[in-house]
Image 1: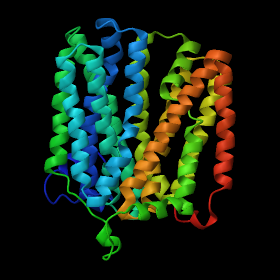
Image 2: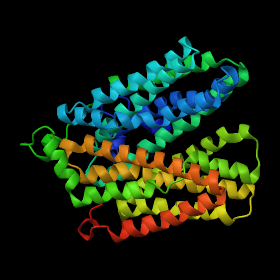
Image 3: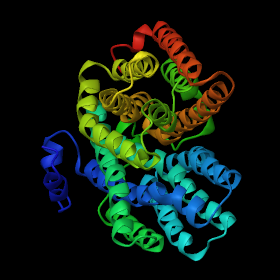
Image 4: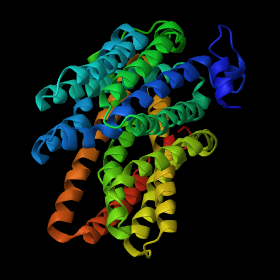
Length: 416
């Protein structure tokens, strides 16, 4: 039902299979946009460390600064892009601007070898991601009925994960055939990004759900957003997201713990990202469907409960290749149960007039909490060791899940 052939068939005007299956043509086209964009992005991300450190000979401090900017800068513009998209209902246009910025940044890597210039173009890439994410997710939510939100976001995230899996493979293939041809990787990355941009520009339709929900509705205002933020359901979701995210180990730390335990070659690191993306691809749609059926908040919290098992394996399971595979599968299941499901949860709660801004608040909060989590985990590991760091995060996550469930408003349990 969700084969590549079926997705591509919907590119023709009037395609209906996705609508009949409960996922609109718009969602699949946005998924294609993300697929091509993630191929482009991951082609660059997967070769960036070796390119900067080995070929351009950046110092660890310089690389650390670039990596920090790359990971955290998107949060700076998400709220602004959300406000603009809501105010004028220009979801597609704002998203297009973000995708275009990321595409242009690929060419920038060809024209400079100075670390400051590279950092600037990577910041442009992340700013593009911050600009496009909330408007794109709002557009997904406005393209399907409320009862199909989990499935829609699951389909989109599956296509996104497919791109994240294919990007490193393509970069590896280019550098295997032509060692050191990083400029060719950047050119190919730009070309793929243009395909995603063309799909968005020519095929995706803008949506405005404000009139559908309330014909007398007015554009978003600060007062309207404040009212939403004060609503018990959204406030609980936001606080829950922050509490759970602050106890979440990043992928990089999970992989570093595995490498420390199994002592596999550092060159195998990209394969762990590919395997995680593959697992995410397989599980995202079933997780979205399950969320629509049994409740999105239950599946969302269940995703974090999976991390408790992952932490336990890192702490007590004897190191083996089998444990590595199980840990990667659990990490994939966590992403499948949380990434798209969180946006489906927020979309179900937020009115259309402030949906993009509200989703941006959730995304920004998650990004900042994860940044804090990475800093905390690194500090505990540095001063007390890796096992105390994993154990601390496990205990904090158990407490966070217990508090989140205890504070879950009873009135909302049947609605989300």
